Amino acid sequence: MMVQGKYILVGKVLDSNATYHGKVEIADNKGKLVVVREINGRCTKGIAAIESALNGDAKVLRIRFKESEINFEQTCMVGSDLDNYARISCYLYQPKIRTMQPGLEVLFYDHTAK
Image: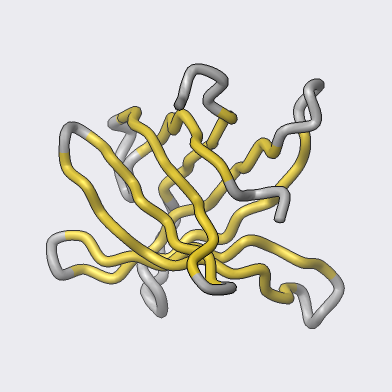
């Protein structure tokens, strides 16, 4: 899958203008995508999958994780950068809770990761 890899994360907090940065790894584990997020020294694990959106008219990367006992979900568009690595841009939100200011995250392939 094109989305597997190590990424640099730049984000905006849900319902806030505060920003943050960190690292994300998306890896295959027995046919399922596992996501490990590291922000401010804190590690969070989640799952991801390619899912249908817009009544099946589009495919998105959906990431789900729990942080401080709060469920979060991301709906992400996957594109490619000039080196043909994935560039992932996401809306961050809490499932089934409306907000006028979703969080935002963009993941850039980390060329320095080992």
